[in-house]
Length: 115
Length: 116
Image 1 (cartoon, chains in turn green, blue):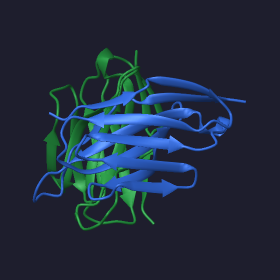
Image 2 (image 1 turned 90 degrees about the vertical axis):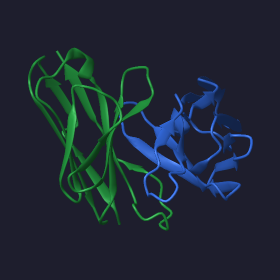
Image 3 (image 1 turned 135 degrees about the vertical axis):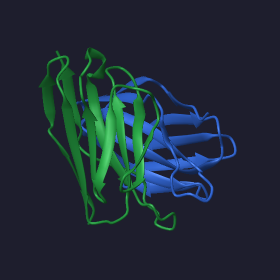
Image 4 (image 1 turned 90 degrees about the horizontal axis):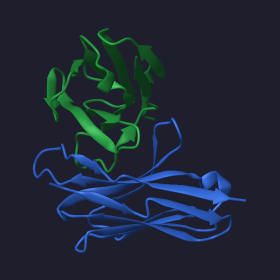
């Protein structure tokens, strides 16, 4: 069965420090991968998506970047965190093959607080 | 641009009641619709997935319907329990044509509280 792992679960970082959040998927190959952010009291916003190794698309301009060094690994990074980067970050995957009737599967999330 | 609206924003009911959560979307060109549950501080758990060609899906006490032409979906919860308390999110996946990627657009959610 497919599983998605996301870590760390919580993170408190000072303003200006770097960030690296990691997400890995098991039990599938060639997944589409996504990073979402959920700010307090707001809905889920798609930040990045990837349809293959090294292929990253950004949905909104921001202080963050994403990378996909391996087929089932997706990394969210920042060189210098801002207070506005605080939020709940969720990784998700979906099957690339449209014939596979799966929806999106989400990880357990990372609560990031920038202080 | 797809917009998804969920009504009501919050709902508080006594245990045992049957209830309906509503979701509407502006662009009917969808690939599928997915209902999620989110407990406080946790990730999203998928409840039901309805393909654009389907009318409804059922899982236990949950039933979700889809009327694609009118841009509406409902999540019906039978015999509600305190353990059902959570935020329920509706998400619509756009039909990206020949590509496999279709953006998932979320509603703001309905916060459900079931009290004993």
